[in-house]
Image (tube, rainbow, N blue to C red):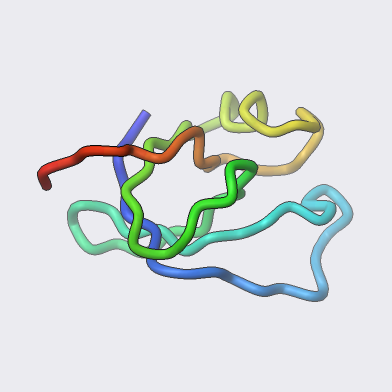
Length: 81
């Protein structure tokens, strides 16, 4: 698991069937790298989140057949970066 910050929404109207209608967010790592994650939680921009990476990221989705390797698992309520 990793801690990242949500930078914004990512809207993609055309996508592969394996992504279904999953919400997508742009995340920033502590090194400034931008990544795209699925978001089953509904996190607004600016919030800190903890994520699951790799093949286990699918297990955090409602439908485990969703094609993802980075999923937001929860919103961090109090984090002093």
